[in-house]
Length: 418
Image 1: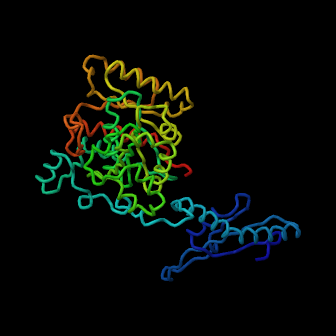
Image 2: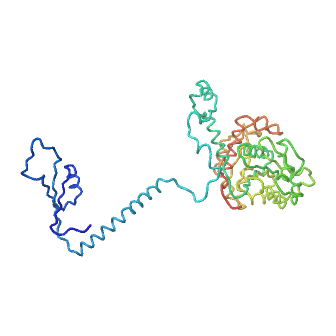
Image 3: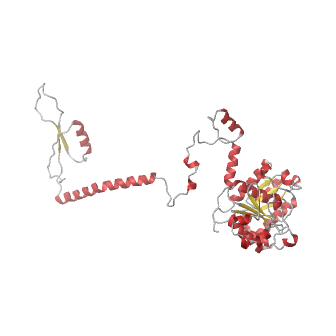
């Protein structure tokens, strides 16, 4: 549309409501004069009624021709760029509202029930816990109080134990300088608690060069030992071959026994341990090592070099606690200070002398040196020194074992290089 010339006037007959809209849309500086219809004309009474018309006169100031051309170009550019700007604004807003998407496609494991199902009376799972279950049944499934506080605590502990790992096997030695404090029992309890809660494979290896008894804590399914693994290492081509050399309990914990021949037990050295550990690392996510009391033995050196975290077992007597603390001191003096800071002390309260000492003082001492302390209570099944049935343990014993497992897992790196 050509720009107006100085003194141009526009005459338009518009309905009254349009006058207000048009006047509001005009620039504040534009002089506008409104005149109501033809003046002095009368209308007969019987004449048909017509809408009253108004005349608007807009006087535009004089604008030089060059400026008029520039204004026309600027107006055209604005008219063309307005839709693009609006589109960009809308695109930006859509981007803000759109959920974040990953450049890589999602796996089928991402389609979980928690993500896809709306929580309502039909999809919410039945509650667990005596009272909550009773209310759910008594109200014909109309009132679902959810799980009890005890069940929620159990699930939370399971979630802590089920922490996922990437980048190879995690190695956890269980050790102390004092024999007879329950180190083998703690190894079995820890392994069972891990295997019972996790979906991946857990193995406990008896690396005691002095004839360990870890394999006696489960029902034996094979007479093979670490010596057989070393001997057959070249012929082990898969997990089926390896699993034939271990015993598995009801929790799916695999246990590899130590040498039973006292004439051969000392032959199990650092190189042999590395062969066993390399093979186990192919098939297991976590490998527990039941170490002997010989802390300067070559097997101990190989064990500590691979360790991601350690568990120190202490009894409840004065000398047992002192020797456990000296184990920490030896580790710090030999360059394993980082393992000490991340260590967990399992305080076995079933040993002799426990009732004569202040366990709180022992815990206070170790709390100044390690990350966590867990008490292992007395249990008649553990005191027998025979096969352990994890489900038949006292609830407080299972809770202690699961708590120890959760603390160990929390101290392991979630992602690292192989």
